[in-house]
Image 1 (cartoon, rainbow, N blue to C red):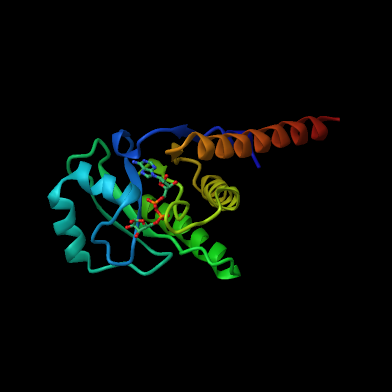
Image 2 (cartoon, rainbow, N blue to C red):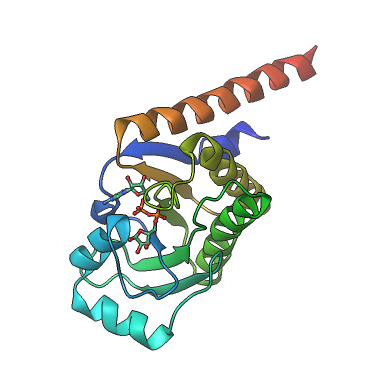
Length: 186
Ligand code: AR6
């Protein structure tokens, strides 16, 4: 993996609704009609027009993604994706990976160059954050290596614990990349 790719990833702690990026990602449910957690926070901050647009879309299957305007948010767009409810089955990781792949593909198709992800499925859907971070970061790196013009992928974590897990994972990958670079020089 190139260090240029990893430098485009950043984990921050905070509220995703406050970020001024091209798009923020919502961890929605299949109805797309709002809910609790980050979904509730995004609908509250974006305002009632978001719900109207979501109604017109008519739902989204698990692992897929849909795009709307950002309305009152600082972000121009919202990409709504539906993570799996964690059951400890192999299909969980495939579906979570689909969320990242499909959100990023939709971003690319809509001229989005900066995006912020919450920890999809890691709240009420129960996905262990230590497993989810590997899927999130691997999917993001694969995408960035294929699309070098893409600017930035942010991971926005609500809790300090989740933030520490993400930072630790990304730092370890950066160290590995530097060691591999020096290894290749000799
Ligand atoms: N900014 C960033 N992260 C947040 C915010 C925020 N404002 N609020 C919560 N989180 P969850 P899920 C974190 O439960 O597990 C909804 O009701 C939170 O700490 O929002 O994918 C939907 O409608 C956690 O780490 O999403 C679905 O029914 C992460 O966001 C269901 O929850 C995801 O937690 C989806 O469950």
